[in-house]
Image (cartoon, rainbow, N blue to C red; front, side):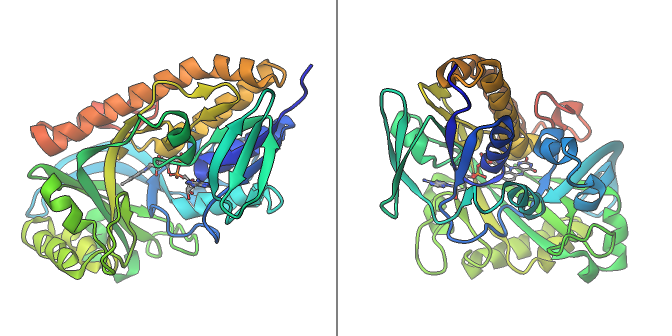
Length: 394
Ligand SMILES: Cc1cc2nc3c(=O)[nH]c(=O)nc-3n(C[C@H](O)[C@H](O)[C@H](O)COP(=O)(O)OP(=O)(O)OC[C@H]3O[C@@H](n4cnc5c(N)ncnc54)[C@H](O)[C@@H]3O)c2cc1C
């Protein structure tokens, strides 16, 4: 019997940390390697939280979701004049990427979470995998998990021909303190995820915990996500930051050139429902994330595997990216347990269902995004647009 493997998880975001936790709990000697030098902050602002994202916290009784997540009960669409276009009951839970990340890394502990550890390459050997890091260190593992996101180094080495495809639009994002919004605006956004449809575009607004983790109404942050088409010819100019450096995946808060920030504020003031325009206007440092489609044809490669966005990056419209990464991690631990620690057997068992999950999500999110950005047939209240990992609403 092989015993529980020694595992290197590359990438220390929500997916990688969840993998580190469930594999450690199984009995593996699991370590998570993150290239960032300091604990990750500000990543991604708000997220809609599906069950899989917080499964670890719930099953272990680690966090009370009502203390780390905000919740809303209504789905609301506004007309440009601020009147309600559509309203229906649809409960959602939201949090900030940071709130969940901080609790998860606390569960993993410093001895298993290694910052400033960028994987540069790996060498599969007969019964192991040797990893090399940017600081010159190397080590040997029974299994390598690539949870290193859309630009995955692990994927680039395994299947360099698979690359992310630009979807034709970006997400403008940001947050404003709820306390800075007028009572009128707060009432209009109250207890809802609020949408507005725009020409070849849409924006959504929802409450998330404050930086300190407060979830009480009045002291939260209000988060917006606004999808805007950017033609290939204009892409480079937008994605060149204030220092003149071209970024290909995201422009962090403070990096977007002032002329683009002014342009979105002017657009919002002219065409958005007043409560939504207030959120955009009040956001000090909006940031940009490029929307891609990424699909691999395989996730298991001997003793190495790909999970989360490293394997399938879906457009964010199903709000399921972190849930998918976590679901991949849980399934991996279950497969290893079923195979009594035999890595190659476990990965072969694990792969087919995860491929199906990834393919279905990428395809559903692509269809949803295209309806908004290119086809003009997004219908407020259509249940097929609901968030969900396995299907809309689930
Ligand atoms: C606009 C937008 C809105 C979204 N909204 C939601 C939402 O509401 N709900 C939701 O669940 N998801 C949402 N997502 C998706 C979600 O952010 C991703 O699916 C999720 O972060 C993927 O997690 P991951 O752990 O696989 O990868 P990532 O979060 O991308 O993390 C990869 C990590 O690997 C590290 N890394 C990279 N290369 C190396 C290396 N060579 N060595 C070591 N470390 C490395 C990186 O620094 C990073 O920390 C949204 C995404 C976008 C763009």
